[in-house]
Image 1: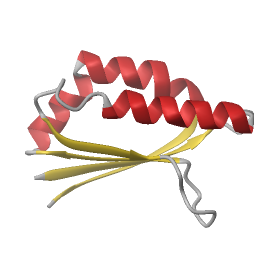
Image 2 (image 1 turned 90 degrees about the vertical axis):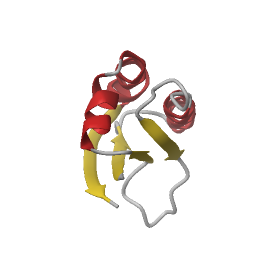
Image 3 (image 1 turned 90 degrees about the horizontal axis):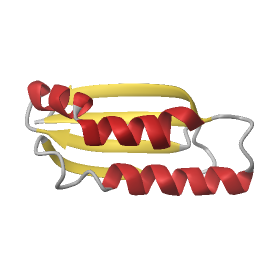
Length: 100
């Protein structure tokens, strides 16, 4: 199994109310992919970090293997969420993929 973890920081210029709305949209959008993408085993998004954190949003997802992760990355449903709800509002992205 492969875990795919991403941490994002939202853009600095976003207001607190915009940040809350955007984080909710990212969570809803990504978690809605469950059941739509065959390669995706599990997905969860955390949007309420502790004050000690330096990331705003975390994606934690699981796949059978690296090929499944590659399929997810280019799947139209995933690309639509990434392009519509994530990329326009984030300034940094850190990713770690690893075998479990």
